[in-house]
Length: 514
Length: 113
Ligand SMILES: Cc1cc2nc3c(=O)[nH]c(=O)nc-3n(C[C@H](O)[C@H](O)[C@H](O)COP(=O)(O)OP(=O)(O)OC[C@H]3O[C@@H](n4cnc5c(N)ncnc54)[C@H](O)[C@@H]3O)c2cc1C
Image (cartoon, rainbow over all chains, first blue to last red; front, side):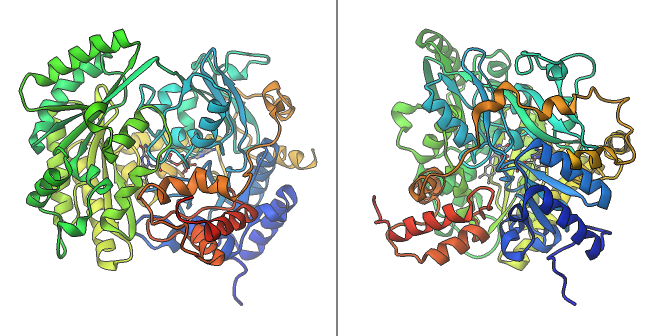
């Protein structure tokens, strides 16, 4: 007999699952328990080069309150049904809204979307997981608060809770998001509710202003993890500066990355350039203005000559450094002189400000991101290859010129072997750089999809052989990356898992932990 | 509170040595911050369009969709399933009713409104 369900959790019989679903229905109401193929369709689409069926959920639960979530984990423990938590569920290139393993039940917190507090004096926000950046942005505008957000590139549809829990990044001075997180409420696997930091203290009003609390700092163990369900999330907002000066510095050659990083590191570490900067390769920016088909025929990676032609036709550098200055006009003037003096030394840099670049679509969206505005322009990347395939390859590099050059060359070589382009950038850090490469491929092309899988696997292997770890990865490769960090870390993760979630009901497989 | 009891009946409550635990009952009750009322809801189709669709479909990222007389059923299908690089949208983000309204809006709208 055909199953009622499109998938079942591992090791759970249909009868048991049916009983669990009935209980979820009585907690949430039948309308908020999704089980049909049609209802679950939006959870199934991923950008990864594996069959979507491998990550198909068995059900999705639309919870709106902490009490419902406490009851849900009770049912999960009773029936040994695993849940996969999402907040806004826009983890594109890392697994989207689909669970790590086939058959897990998605606990979708998108409808838990109240902005609980925005404090314009202390500059913080406390939100529920389903709040999007756009919702918060509109709220701040409506209240005329002089506050800025820091958002990842898909700002308009993603949200601060999910992004920060996955240790995502943005482009303002608050761009390393977890640094600016302050206080969480977490439903634990046994149904208890933990407020981290100062939030554990009854009547405390310092939950969102002091990160550390008392005793071991716990917030970190709820990021990139499966130790709890975050139901409230506090974080700091940047006061809107009186003046803002975005700029781009272009360099002509790929090996100029050495000079760029050597020049920018001291400026970043000393705070002259305060924001999470981007050093974007021509191929990361090209899709906002150029079509790949106009420059490439046949299969295989784009040639260096074609890239140079794109640079010429579309006013791009081989590297394009986006950064900004923030503060009073006087502060900006002083720092602008320091920046331009530093970058002018070798005579290789072309420095452009809003005056020259205001109409450039790449500059426009980069400037928007550096002031925490809403945009989805970076989705242009998906018009490059077409077909909706994408994985973020995200190794961490020292902010040292020779290291970034080495990582770029390794990545480009391995991608080229599989006929894929280097759409890469180095972002964020002071002492580190997140090396972010969009491994773009056409998911409707089976051969290219297979190549993309093998390529990604090889990238991870070769990089870990060189001692380079990745900071975040899609759900198809989480075990592999966990393995690269060695057995002791895995053992500690597992020990914590056993203590906090003995039945393994919370997101088994997240970061390779089960 | 009936179902909460079931939660506490779960075996293996071996947590306490590790974490500082908030009192579940005090948290279940309303805090001052929670007095803000219900969460976000879409007002109408044009709001959904402006706050979601337009970021790609009016920004030369996705194709133009207004002014083409696209059938509402087709729009609804693509929104729920996604299409190549276009992401799918869940009921949690856009409930069926709001989706129907934005589909109707897009279907009837002129190209450059
Ligand atoms: C073109 C493009 C550009 C991108 N640029 C960036 C960028 O600049 N910076 C960046 O960081 N990312 C970027 N991304 C990746 C991704 O889309 C964003 O990180 C996005 O913010 C993640 O989705 P979300 O915010 O909806 O989080 P979610 O998908 O809701 O959550 C992410 C993960 O966190 C965990 N989680 C979520 N909620 C909970 C919870 N309540 N309790 C416990 N665990 C939870 C889950 O493991 C979940 O999979 C980009 C993607 C694309 C397509």
